[in-house]
Length: 229
Image (cartoon, rainbow, N blue to C red):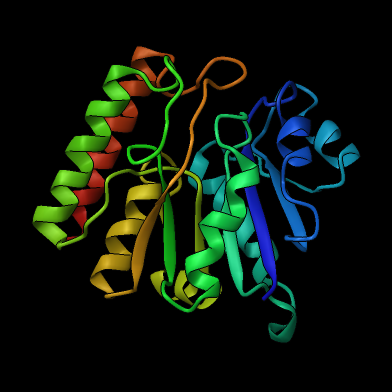
C-alpha cells in the first residue's frame, strides 16, 4: 500500500530536517512539507532533505493540512496513496514509530489510527498542564456526545485515503484534529489508537506556548465539537 506523509510546518527550520531523517526508509512514497508562510528557511531546509515542499500563505494548521491533501489528491486516482499520515514538524513526535501507527490499517483492522500520547510515554515538560486538561475535556465530550472512544487529539495519525475523502475536512485552524475524529465517529469508521512517545519540541510552541494560542485553540476545539451535533 502506498503511504504519503503530510507535515504542516511553520518556522520549523531547526527541526524539520531531523524529522525527515527519522521517517523510516522505504516505508513512505512521498513526504509533503507544507510551509505555512514561515519567515525562516523551513521550506529550503525541507527541500534539501528530500521533501516535496508546498507554500501555503494562509495561516492556520488546517490550511496547511488541506494544501497537502489537495496535492496528494491531484494525482490520477490509481496513483493516489492508500494511506495518508499526518505528522508535526517540530520533532515532538517520533517518526520512527510510523510502522506501529499504520499497522492496524495495513492489517485491515482500522480506517483511522490516532497516535495517543495519553497511552504512551511523555517526556517531562512535553505537554503543558493546559494541553493535558484540554485533551481530557475534548475526548470526554467526544465520548459522551458522539460515542467516540479516544484518549487524545494527537497530531500523529494515519488514515485511509478513501476515509479521509469521505470525512470532508473543512477546518482551517485549531479544530482540525477534533473535526477529523468526530466526523470519523459520525461516519462509523473503524477507529483505533496506538500508544506513541512524545517529547519536548524543538523551539517554542505557537499554541500552548502563549496565552492567546492556548485560549484560541481551546475555544476552537470546543466550538467544533458542539458545531457538528
